[in-house]
Each structure stands twice: as C-alpha cells, then as structure tokens.
Image 1 (cartoon, rainbow, N blue to C red):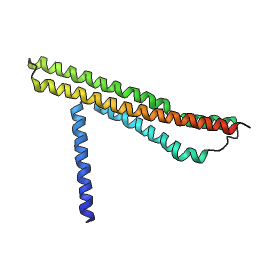
Image 2: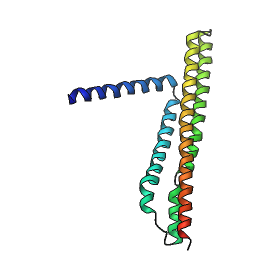
Image 3: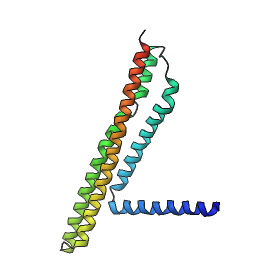
Image 4: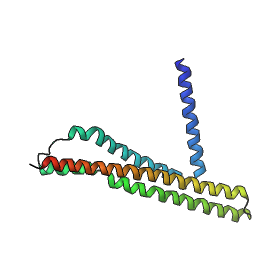
Length: 165
C-alpha cells in the first residue's frame, strides 16, 4: 500500500516537473533569469518571515545599550530593500521577455517571408508567458515586501516603547 501511494506522489511530482519544463521552454530564454531572481527573492522573503515569526519573539527584550538597539534595528530591516528591488526587477525581466519574443517573431517573419499564423502565435505566446510570469512574481514580492516592512516598523515601535523609562 505504501509503495502504491509513494508511486502516485512520484508520478505527480514528475508530471508537475514536466509542466514547469514546458512552461520554461515556451517562455524562452528570459524565463531562466526570471526563475533565478524569483528564487532569490522568495529565499529572502522566507528568511525574513522566519526571523519575524520565530527569532524575533525570542529576542524581544529591552536593549541594554545603544549598540544593541542599533543591531536590533539593522536585523529588523535586513534584506527588505533588496526584496523591494528584486520585486521591481521581475516585471522588467518579464518585459524583456516580451520584447525578445516579439523580436524573434519579426525575425522569423523576415526569414520565412510571410506572417504565418504558427510563427506569430509562437512569438506572441512567448511574450505573454514571460510578461505574466514577471508580473505575478513581482506583485507577490511587492505584497510580501509590504507586509515585512509593516512588521519591521511594528518591531521598531515595540523596541522604542520598551526603551522609554
């Protein structure tokens, strides 16, 4: 029974991997930088959520010195600017994919001498896939970045409140 269940899970994972691979191929070469920047962004986002949900509650105590207060403030805001920057880069990479898809389409039209539907559809599809991917990844990063900034501000307010006599 366990072997049949694990076989089903493996088949599902392999099917999902094939779909991701098809999407990466359909989106063209810009999909790889989109994937890399997205993974970096989400790695930083998960690190920050780990800090705010697991580490910070254990650290919450009154800072004993000005140096300790500055260190805590730095820890609260760590990587948030980079997360916002990466969230802004992702839609731009999507736009780059749009441009490369359209340029590739016009290049193929030039080579074959006609605007055959299949040629145009492939280029437009590539352009739309990269645009959508960049927008979805960027917008999700913007939302997470906003939430993390709000948490950092709340942590800073709590720190300031605990330092007053």
